[in-house]
Amino acid sequence: MNTSIDYRKELNPEQYRVVSEGDGYCLVLAGAGSGKTRTLVYRVAYLLDQGVRADEILLVTFTIKASREMLSRVERLLGRPLDGIWGGTFHHICNRILRKFSPRLGVPQNYLIVDEEDARALFSQVIRDVVSQELRKSFPSPGFFSYLRGLALNTMRPWEDLLRERFSEYADHFFLIGHVFDEYNKRKREADVLDFDDLLVMAYRLLNEHSDVREYYSQKFRYVLVDEYQDTSRLQARLVEILASKHKNLLVVGDDAQSIYSFRGASVENILEFTDRHPSARVFFLNTNYRSTPEVLYLANSSIENNFRGYQKRLKAVQGGGELPIVARFSSVEEESAFIAQQIEFFLDEGVPPSQIAVLFRTTYHSAKLELALAHRGIDYVMRGGMRFFEQAHIKDVLAYLRVLYNPKDHMAWQRILCMYPGIGPQTAKRLYLILRDVDLSNLGELEGRWGTKVKSAWERIGYIFSAIQGLSAYEACKLILDSGYWDYLRENFEDYTSRQEDLIYLLEFLKGYRDLESLFSDIGLSESFKRPQKESSDAVVLSTVHQAKGLEWEVVFVMGVVDGQFPHSKSFREENGIEEERRLFYVALTRAKRHLLITAPTMSFDYRFGGYFARRSSFIEELPRDGYRELNPLPIDG
Image 1: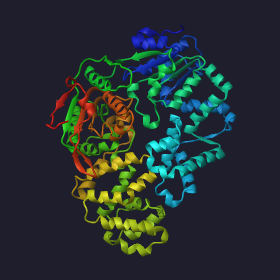
Image 2 (image 1 turned 45 degrees about the vertical axis):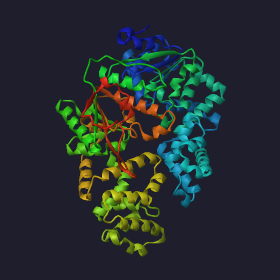
Image 3 (image 1 turned 180 degrees about the vertical axis):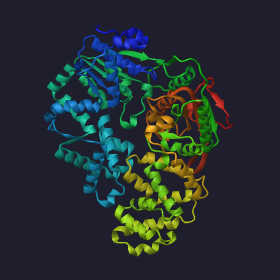
Image 4 (image 1 turned 90 degrees about the vertical axis):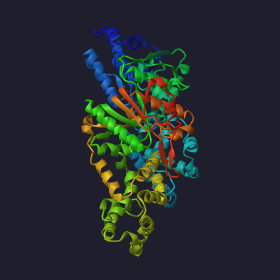
């Protein structure tokens, strides 16, 4: 061995076994906080020390940043630059392969790659050209087409089957949807462009249909290593298995207990069935956790053991003992939010840095009342990986009507409302505003004769809405706005409209607490005043969905809204294996905490169809061992 690295000394026994014995087909089950990145870095260094050439190693990661970080760490370990290693994302690797052999598939080597935004723009153009304006009112959005196509290609299933299973509301447009896909693919071919999904599919085709190309790459890569294997799709798993088919040295690292991206096409079966596909495979476990206290891990281990599918393993803590996690139940979301804000203040006073405190939730809309509670206390926060609740487009759309109701001269709100309607663009909206700012909202119908045919139908609806919401509460006005066409607008314009529907239903709940618009907009304005650029996030508390929090850690973690229907999400009860994925998501949330873990649940929840109702405390809490947590102020309500 040509290095001074003492692998046995620098790695724990579990990691060392992977690094030194990782030839052949190997599945490394790396638990949360167990040092999987360190293990991969040392494995690459070990191979190079064993005389394996750099260009014989393929390291596949899920981000370019992760690849660069790992390879730079290898360079620092070895004390020399690395030349020739293939490292990068699936898309990056496939692009390199296609640049050499794409003419075999009739694609020129100088093809252009269109990003997701350009792909949606092309779908939008196709829809405008092949779908009548009348049909577009109930037709899927361009983003929906990008999502459905990507899901179908990555899961290697026909889009027709996915449409029937998941999006039956579009069944009437079945053949027209197929026509849009055909035209989209045709226009890409004519322009010599590929989208991100094409890179994977075309590379897979190339390797399958051309044996010499398959032989070239499978011979080239003596060792193939894959990070975050639980997040791979069926297509991605097939790709790496082809590339490793000659030397049969495929080492995949992941954790079935953290597989939470099936909605993107990820397949937990890639891990669960790895030994079925490769009977000779060795299975390694990284169970030593360097992140959390024994108390946090006891709760996390106990939760995930309720899943029927998965490898049985228990994380072991290196850290000394700490405090029992807390489970607290409250009478309302307001009370829950006030408690979290108060506890955050306590931890800040105790010297915990703001950036080491996180509040996690299942869905973004759960944060709305918490954002206000933090703003009232002057606690700065950042929303990780997404927009704050009141910054989101669909929330701003609906509130724009209330803003105009409160202040008819609100130019930005008028502009937003008018531009939502066909036939009204930014310039027309500006001209209309000059007339509208001096008109009584209750008499908008009197202006109907002043508009041309193009604007007339839009104006009829706008006039009706403002006439109907006069004198209504914020809640009643919002419900009328939604039921007067915005639900349809949402479906037509946002590919993720189902999650945005949930946001708007929560907005209705939020508005029930306001008697007047002045206090509503004062609170929202206060919340907005605490915006900070992301570069200052090191001085702020973190708010995040659990999906966005994966791979991160904090000293203090709150998991809020843990009631059935929210966490686990209501849709999981209707999906095959849905509850198990939700429990994995809960496990990810728990294992983000280093020392302090607080789980909260409101008793009263809300549905705009039925009003308030009692929420059942999540089955995930009921499954936890009673000796594993301290219950704070338990309420005498049957859970």
